[in-house]
View 1 (tube, one colour):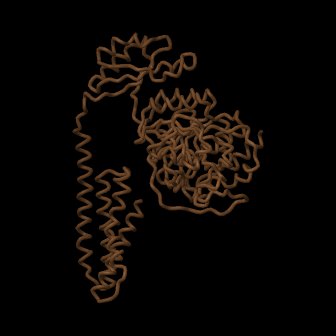
View 2 (view 1 turned 90 degrees about the horizontal axis):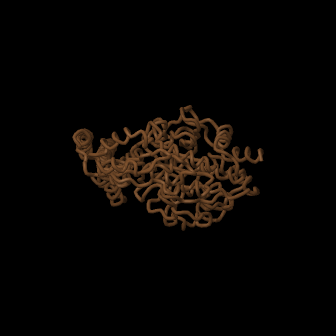
Length: 510
């Protein structure tokens, strides 16, 4: 978006400068009206895709608009000079906008600093703690402590019994005012006889995808899907999925693997999903992120509609939806853990999570939820994150037992936004730039992010599980690692998954 926004302003104002000089010299300029409209629209691009889509703050968006227009004006001043037009008409406001850009940038940083420094918390606003009791303890045993601080406890995971998991069954969500939270936590921690662990029920979010308007094409393989937009999916070839089509066309899966998308829900009525969507609670999506991920993982393929995935003929993967996040893309540790538990109890083969948040220490509730899912034979795949930082400081990327996915670009290099995964136990990479997939309501849209790379790996694992149902997470990861290829110029992310090679390895070992 950054480069496109600047280029749009340069083109718009340069055309205007050319037209202005032409008119001043009594020369024809037939594109005057379109040029004026383009000049008016160019600055709005950043506003819509920055502030409008929530990818930038107000001050970042305003400063970016001023900078883009200033650059456009300065370049157009050069065009005007070459055309012998009115240079001052563009040079003076360009310089003034550069000054305004500096002022707005400094003002935004100052305001953000003051807000953070002097913000006063709302002491009456409720906050939530996750409290784990011992396996032999009852919530009634801490009732006195809770009452003293005006707190209320509700069992977190009512569908998990002690006989199934004595840790998850004993988690409680405790609601308390912020002013009382610290004292409550201190008193509960002192109750070592009943309380095993306490952590904040931290907010978690989807990893915000980056809007993309670019499409890439790929050359034909031995067998092609008849999905009309398949050739706009460069990642099919980069991930080895297109090479796998010939193998999958004649393959007979042992079962249809269940790939669970834990997100904002999934639009189960989408034309490219309806035939492969299995009964599950997250069958609607008011946000769109989950639907996009679902299409990457298992859109019905070779069905004459939309896009392609590894789900050839829809016979390898059944998509399931679980709402870990709300319509705004927000959730908590508890909501994500609950979705993991629900998907695992529904016998999901692969659980895909394109979400998370900063957390240098893996949250205990997610650790236990992943352990529970793995105990029920689910493979858990998670996104590395889009901050170009160490994924070891983000959860669930740093939770033991998950396969963490970074993102690569069309040049097989680390995507600029992708978090790094050098210290994680099980880490791989998949294409995550300009990924075309489904949009709620039956349309299609392209996004970038590790959110897109993750379901791509989930789809590969789903097909592997369809061919070999007993494949465990460690063995599956070892296959992905040994058959993948090394990213160009980076040892900070895992191998780029090659679907055909991985599937071939599974078929060979059957």
